Image 1 (spheres, each protein chain N blue to C red):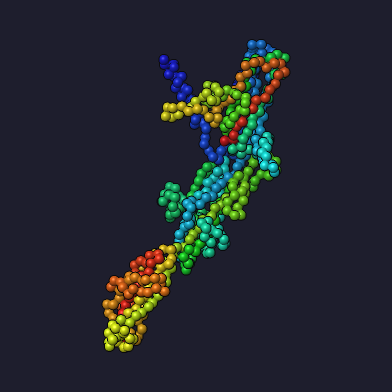
Image 2 (image 1 turned 30 degrees about the horizontal axis):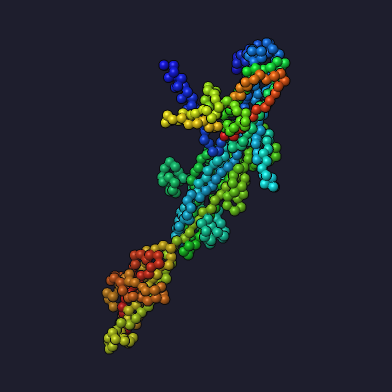
Length: 154
Length: 358
């Protein structure tokens, strides 16, 4: 364990030494609750994950910011799904997803899963194991943004 | 060529792994599990890879208490008066995300409409609850190998359904179609200790705690069993199916020594024919119906005159006996006796015999 930590530091240090440039990333989770008011209108509330039980819908929000003085290029955010969370959707953020533990990547509608009888079926959101957003343009200094995806507690 | 084949093999394996990694549990993630989500950022500045940044959050999956008690089948249990060990069948499902004990109470409804539309009119006695033994005996039906429960089901694991039998005795002397409604109610109790009923469970009120909170998620059961109270229930009922017998006796003069069979009169030496008709207006056939009639002292039984299983025109007692049948029965002074094997529902049968006036 200690050895692993040292290795991690070793990997981090050169980057920080090369440029005093860093990116801030915040990761928040909310429980999405739908309530119906007296007029019958549905309201969606995002709550802190206080009481969470299987079947609850979760919204994961990733806020990123380039806190450095130079543009950040080849900007890739990777989020493995927790084992107890089933992927639902990622809104309109169009991430790349992996359904095989991060080996292969693609848009969800282009991936297929092999079945035991040798045929392949289209991948479903529940098959997703990892999500990745790869930015084609650099994030300018001071630039920030927000990404989100939804999941369901298994 | 070989490497190409290998690649295909690896993709295939990976796809299978991803399939297996999706558990299809209805109850879901075990209570107390901490879910940690970590995102990482890789980026470059001026063409040089920078240190990876990561951010995480975590939360604990709380305990969802959910259970279902369902009657198995959609029909009443037919019973006969005096029957012992009459069985109604229920199923209990633990849909919570934790192994739990379940306290069980089998009670009787007091009047009102029972599970299958009848009106509750009597109570059964000696109510017991058995758990189906799925290793021996008749699986799914009550038998001697099933386990008599002492008020609770011990350590029922997640997403498991078990069959429970409410077994009771039926009092004697009940009318056809009498109904006794029963209710089985299960209440979630703390699991974790094998062989002992766990403590009562209360829902976490107020603010969330960092640990495992409890949320009741059950639906409403029978009247009086609200949703989200940690318990669930269902009704079933017993319906008495018995034979209801109506008896009528009629007679006619066959002959006298002077008029013979033309307008015979009831003078000494006259032959009288008796008919005992038995009709069944109940819900099941009556079997081994024994008809017994004492011949009055003023009459002398005519040997060999007993006819059994004859017909009756109309409804007993307002119709008329057809004075027919098959020879049978016996006479042991002063009693005429005959046994009719079966009187079907809605049918009538007769015993006919002759005697002379002293």
